[in-house]
Image 1 (cartoon, each protein chain N blue to C red):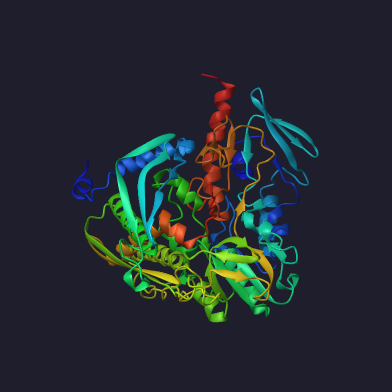
Image 2: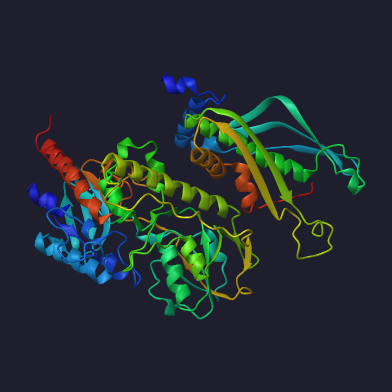
Length: 398
Length: 186
């Protein structure tokens, strides 16, 4: 956004509570790699120039990449500046921070979709003797005591942590709710390559049936690794990880799981195959069938005959729980009435329902790719155009 | 109305459902419902239940008529077999909920149904309810529903219908997830 505003001659400042790429520096586990390949992190006027376009960045590489971009575009960034409140004062916004105030015509909320972890209410009922970490506080398996581990959540984060922790010698049980399975590599290409090439990632927010539902869909169950392997529930089962249904509560020290596991896996397989069908059709229409491997399908997710519905955690030798149950944004500092009753920002493709206020970096903000690094550029171009028109309009009313 | 919309008719007023969904999105209070039944003991294991009123859309609602249900146990339990057993009502509830969902979703997805039949079976170990073995639960060990669907759609689309119907089913949720139950005596 800073780059787009600079291009359009808009005087601006970017406030950063820590250092550039703060959440990548401080809120991710050690082994994490980006879920998108190197070539795909394209930012306005900037892209990958290394010799491993199909690799996946480690966290230090992501940090270096964003750091370098900030320098290349000479972004006016105020680091170590935490926003404590944003209020509307007449026709301006008053931004209070730990390092003084700013008064500005327009504000772009780019603090992200993943600021606080979302954990089921019932986590409070777990005995204090149990070690509990979240996807934000987890760093490596040795943080956890020896013994069994319950990983709650089976999207990209849950499956990756389950695999890593199980390999560390701590037997893992994974509680599986809604998730979307995807092969890492399909017909010789990264799944992201297909989604990018076939236009799936460019699908616009105002062209989908139910945007609220599309925004709530979990992200693909992918992992970035050097062997480009698919990490799905079948892979976890093959490693010896035990699958149970969605975590639904605690009763008398027993964890309770939904009996819906079979359908969750069925829905996920169906969604994956629908995506692959669309890719196959696109490949045929675009004459790619001779260049890539033939069409194939992964075997259906293997679901145990009768997975346990309750588990006495202590009795089952489970000594720790890892909550990988998703994130929410934190806009507690935003004192402008733009949140709906579910605390979601009311906006139309990133144009927030308050004059001169914009939102960036949220799931399906303007396009399916909006939450990806690769999605920031197109959204920022659109929204900075809108922002410039807004500034012109307030300068010359009527 | 477009050609496709005209040609698909599963008897579901999908437009009404879609506008109800929109209306309730904007008025969450009206979405708060209370479902009720009344039950009276007759004799032995025989009871007679009725369903008449419910609360929803912000007010008391009445059915066109009172629906009645007799429940009893079969003769092998030395009962008179005057009605389905309560656990069979649960199976009826699940099957009819999923089936209604299939029709509604098919209509929404413009899939013409020709026939939909289901069989449903619940496995139960009576050692639970008879108190023979504490480790055996009272309820079903598992429930299996098998659909036979003839429709103008691919097998994959039909499977997706059935999967989505489970995702949106009240009774499926009730039987797969825990519910707090309070039983009081006046």
